[in-house]
Image (tube, rainbow, N blue to C red; front, side):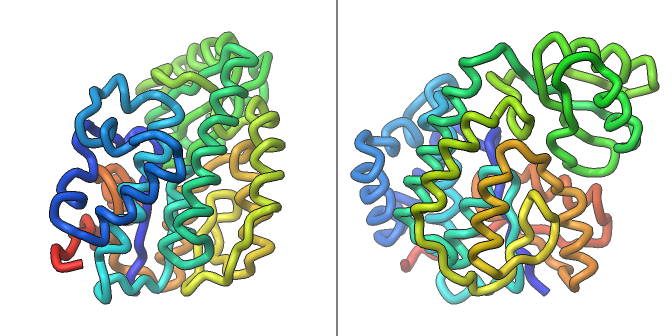
Length: 297
């Protein structure tokens, strides 16, 4: 069975999407539509901007979403997923690719999500840290016993868990994690504590936008970050999407469940190959590939 997976924040690069724009009239049409929806030429930043330009919150998330979704649209008849999943932001790309959201609504939600997250980040100094080489339960226990707000945020693959919270709490937890035998506990260059209780103001803001958006039954199950299980009911999809900003990304568990449900081939749709690497670490026998577009659409 074929699983299509969609990357999240961090996969952006200068020049992303330019090959699509230059070689596919369909892609060009969607990129121009995106410029109109967003009210600025995101294509200029994606195609010619610096790495610094692409880090701007209002740009990063829509840029990755656009690269993934427009690439999926150019795959034509070869895009036949039996299941889809996306890592954090990538869940929105997956929902559009699977027909649960329109392109326009998906892009508007992603743009609102980015701005709501930026506002939440500015309310309190917060960050994230990557923890390597410890079992999940040890990381979870240390987070629970650390003073301040710090939680497990991204279950990326066995032995790789990202924690999220207040800056001082993250620093304290990193010291404890190193003492417990972590190979690394490295604070990441991010501007906020994504997938933690500190994103509650963003969750509330995004919830209103999601509630007012029409969702459809997807063409195949989506394995959502919050539950790591196959979902097709649009009301459940909405509820999980609202919970996503303050809940952990259960990527390890999602991939494990997809494999248990019959997935053998994982195709990454969008910039980079990060998810393919994670899938291989979760299940070495899985086949992985990058999606490549057809120039005639």
